[in-house]
Image (cartoon, rainbow, N blue to C red; front, side):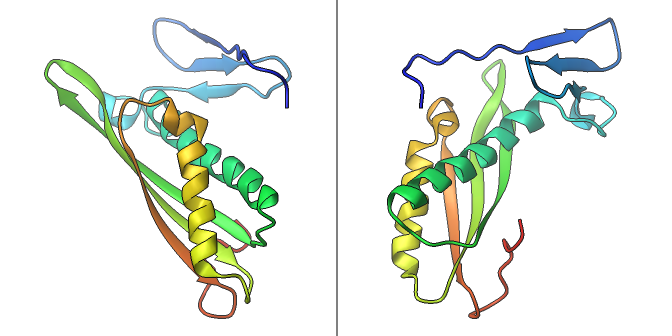
Length: 154
């Protein structure tokens, strides 16, 4: 890992109407638009969806590091994240996020140990830690062979 601070640069470019193009060096361009809730087309990534996605993405990546450091075997992690956007006073803002995380582990792994590792990952997720709104983790641990691994192959 590189020494802190880290710097990230993204360019967002748009015209009077239509899509916004999100670009960064060495990355594929993303196309963004307002969500349907704000009279957008609803068929493109929006800033709201990108923020919600970043929480799940960060949790999976942080969990990888936690599991590796703690030598915790696992199969897959699937995070379904929902964010609530509301008006607080006169300001529109996210007021909370729920992360429904399903972690698949092999037979023989202590589900409580896996849950603690998932909770540690959530506590160390830099995206969650950077938000004003609370992030609530709702973990489910599925042991291979004990049920359907919803996260398998995810």
